[in-house]
Image 1 (tube, one colour):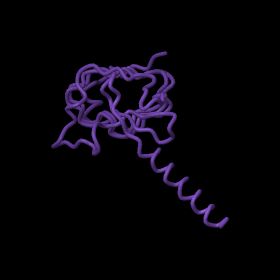
Image 2 (tube, rainbow, N blue to C red):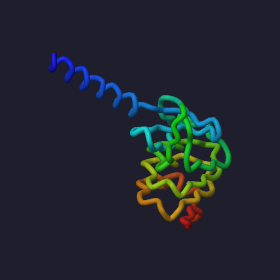
Image 3 (cartoon, rainbow, N blue to C red):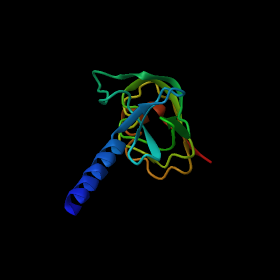
Image 4 (cartoon, helix red, strand yellow):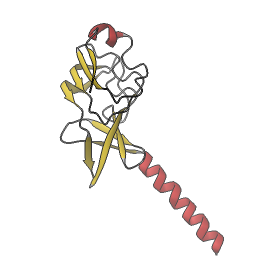
Length: 149
């Protein structure tokens, strides 16, 4: 009987962990999509369930994007601590992005293929930028990536 209870608790722990790690949602205020792996913090992610491609670009994110410092979903408030891999990948209509001071990491290829992007405001607290602004995006925005306090 004790073994059955232990296995049930283990199973429930795994199910709860999988549920939390798979949490994706769209913020109604900003229109951005977020993903939370821990139920406390969130990363900006690409819209929908699969990442955009060169032949199927991200047309959901448009214009001047201001990433919020926190978002609320299902009664839980999440601190926005990162921009995930490919979050703005081929977001061909994004012209500028303001990153809040709560963000610490910017993932791989986060801004690749953003052909209209001219400015990214990055706060001093960002610790890791991966290869987010390399390639076509870096060539397009030139020296307008600004780190500030």
